[in-house]
Image 1 (cartoon, rainbow, N blue to C red):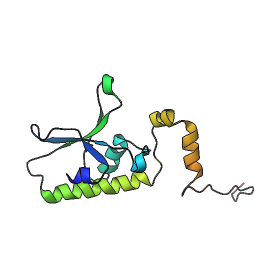
Image 2 (tube, helix red, strand yellow):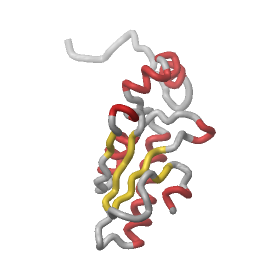
Image 3 (cartoon, helix red, strand yellow):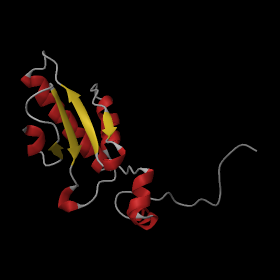
Image 4 (cartoon, helix red, strand yellow):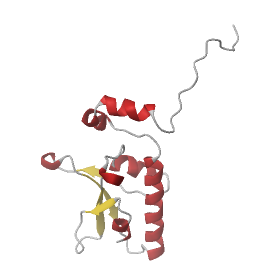
Length: 135
């Protein structure tokens, strides 16, 4: 429930049956597309010690990507709260750092990526005409 409350995820798995949770990312704030996907989120969570593999669905619905979390018997409420906090931290990081996949470049168009890089916190380095160095 806490994952859904964050506004970032949609639960894809059923409530009963196998002890796992399958989730996918919802569009970003204000309905805008995210410049990252479940695979990049999985990689970011791995840096915090979590193993939530990302998958694509069969060819008929290959546009659907998901993260899978297997819930072990010793998974406590405190551990669940830590996972949600780490997921929020990873999303916050990815929201503020430019990440884009090749598929997204094709989908959004190169002009959108160029426009994004021209604005915001990204600063272009000054051009130098003289360099210090050893000849």
